[in-house]
Length: 363
Image: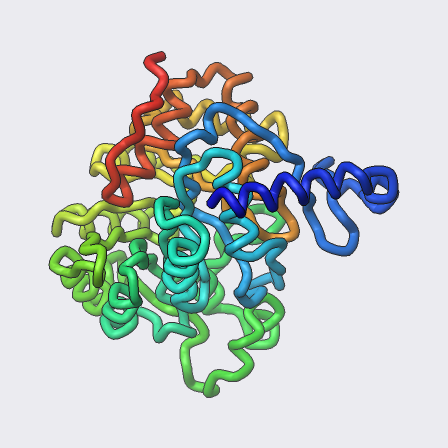
């Protein structure tokens, strides 16, 4: 670990020496963040007390495919781990939308970077992993090290797709294949009579196969580490978040509501004992988004919220920078250090079965 930190110091010194030429290569994206036109976001080097002991539960990193909307990754798992460790973070959860790579990456980070860094994997049940099926779930838990920890309902292959402009969900079952292939190119390879999405409900109820897989999860333990699997709700409709959370809690699972936004069901989900995921990539974008996020925290309580980033792609700042920017925005809107520590440190540790850190603010 000390060697890695020395490398970061050397890299920082080299960057400083090249600052004039680098500045000429910089541009600014639509949201005002510095970017390198050739590589996307740059490391802004932001630091904050909230990073000390934080766990980012939602980061997208190479090696990975661009997936829906061709979202290229801006850094790989080792690069992200180096930066997170240097900034004092406790861990991160690598999410791969279309395979089990997060569990593999977590093993490699622990094996070759820092065995004390709490790296985990997160895998949704999309078409490329066979949709809702126990075989994929079982294998995810048995990848060496046992760091595959969050199993998620469908995301990029869900039935509903948020419109990139209005952010309202659209039912892709009504789309033709050509239209859907613009954001999910793999659907062109499916048989003509095959579903181009992974269904989870019918007539307002969870499908039997969904209930069956959820029912298997409480008795599963990850290989080597003996961890319990967490259920995440995926890119679901508001009412589907409730159905999944209710079933997961009924069988005793820890449940994460995948970045639902400010939906009317949030108080009900919190009452069920589920954790609500908030993503720093959305929180940090504008003054309005920071104020809106703070209002959600005040409405349902920080004890029910976990801050991830959804960063690591070229359209967002680096994960550590994004966490800091979100924290600063929340503070400016009245969120306390204690509330930030709950969302950044305490709740993600509980989600992953870890002991909460000691460095927690009291107010």
